[in-house]
Length: 372
Ligand SMILES: Nc1ncnc2c1ncn2[C@@H]1O[C@H](COP(=O)(O)OP(=O)(O)O)[C@@H](O)[C@H]1O
Ligand SMILES: [Mg+2]
Image (tube, rainbow, N blue to C red; front, side, top):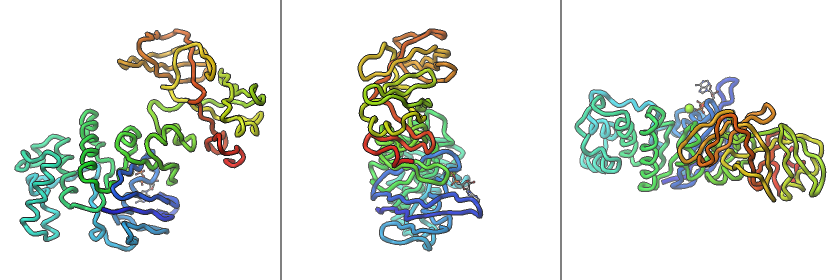
């Protein structure tokens, strides 16, 4: 097992900076997910760990060893890609064993590892089949098995579920999580899908445009996003945002705009008092809105439900408020109908505020000026 450490690592392709001064420490045995939109530098980061891309500057360590110039085959890693490229003419058993044969691992040792891997991910009864006789999910399991037999210090996975249909994706997601629990091996897992990141990661590193935005547990990212990008990226459906103006002071401090009028929560007053008359971005999650008439420590507003999506237990409401769109998720017991004008409430402790210029969160404990 091993840690993986990015120390000010940058990767440039000509003019393009794919990964910009990445500082990230992945702990031994941790399931670290790199997540972010397409093109943000996830695959490049992973390929640098694998040794498939040269590093432009900075230091990369696996365990205590600087690996900047270590060949891929000497890094003790195994990688699973989105396209699982099995050898079509070989059985599952031979697909699993092939890499070990190349490495001249003794036959008895190969047999032991193939058997163990096949047991671990339930391939034992498929060992004599060829890839074309397998379903997509089974093929992806073979690709996983091929990584497992290597018994690496670090697993690297690049969007390994994206070729699977929705149901199989959920199953395989759980299988990979179980695999990690059983093996306890360090995993670095790349995905653009925040649901995958949230459900699988011990910690998540959110990237955008080559830059690391925030690293934390799923709950830390959900509860305390450090900026508007992370706030909007983590959580489904996405956080609502509204541009508001701060006015008044003390108990009378209020944020208004886009049809909303939100008392400034005491915890944010010290930070936001200095932004008198300035615009801020307010953020609140759809699932934190509820139908109701407000009350102490709540903000309230009325909005028209344009579209109602029934989800079983919940319903997802697309609202319009003075021409702005908002989304709310409420209990389907409310039976809202399209066109209804509905009263909503938001607990003020669920309100996030962001600097409208930098997007940085405005924290209760940090003066606003410090984020500018
Ligand atoms: N071989 C390459 N040559 C030039 N640019 C590249 C190369 N590989 C990736 N890039 C660029 O680097 C950035 C990051 O790419 P990538 O790491 O593949 O993103 P992600 O995996 O997050 O979608 C993108 O702008 C991409 O176009
Ligand atoms: Mg990629």
